[in-house]
Image (cartoon, rainbow, N blue to C red):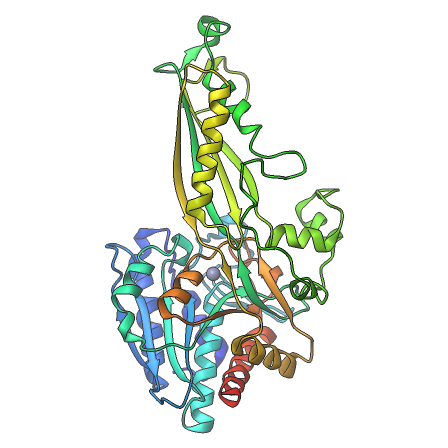
Length: 453
Ligand SMILES: [Zn+2]
């Protein structure tokens, strides 16, 4: 194995493990094999696990240590990446790791999520080298389909669950710091339910010169309906929507005090002058701990340039709701359906309404007082000499609640890179300081976990 952390990252970046592009499946397999063989070199028992869903990329499982006196920690990351082409606006070849004078290395996957894999493997390697063994029993679970909705992940993990044995804690290395200057530990993601609201009228698209003024147009029905989902202050109007939202406690409010969040920078970054509530803590809470409803588009409606006098025969409104504890996606989907059906009835329309769930995922909320967070907080402070923040995200990573329930163990999110790294974007990068720091923090954290227990 290469002794240089950047050389190892360079090798990994060179594999085009783009999961959304099935023509790269062979590259994804090679990435998995390369990780497996490097785990073996440092003494970890590693296996390539075929994905239970045909055509999906394999997973890498690994284990080291069976000491009943030690805690067993499972590491999760993903080796697949988002697509990237020079033509997208990259300054350098996205699959050639390029070091620049700004202290960063550039390449697809440097931040998301190959850098964290490299930091983890080097942390394990150095701990074993220095102490002869790890302070914890180690389990590795890397997937190659995260950027494609983790296809086959749950089935493959459930089928091979016994491989891991009893797990005490799950470390998710697939997030980033809260700000470029403040390391953070992640304790929550929102859930989601996504639906299509279909209105069908005429059996095909019509000309407004023929049917305009004579029929109830499906698109007009749909816009009437969609205008009733949420008010202009962002309040979701679905009956019972907020019933299960956990009330805010003093303990939770305190977690927002130490956050270096600039409302102005947030507004600048999205190019707006005003948010719904001009207060930074409320805005963060609206992003992280409050639910919301968004309207994404209308399938079947004319959206090209210029004018076209078509009256669509069938349109589908695309709507999603981000959910928070204790809103269950299934229950919210039912409430939404009931609400929309009742509202549609009020329109006395001859058209047909069909509501189709298009996907959902559970929220996750970690316990910031458990051993993972206490040892993580100490480790970040020890290394960076900065008070770390506890952060949530408005997005969704449904595999986290899945792993918590499957392994009956708590999870924690540990970011290695910075939010400005441009994960998924052009010129993705990671600061070398963060890569090395991430490795050191993992070492400190595992040591702290062992000392606590
Ligand atoms: Zn990722």
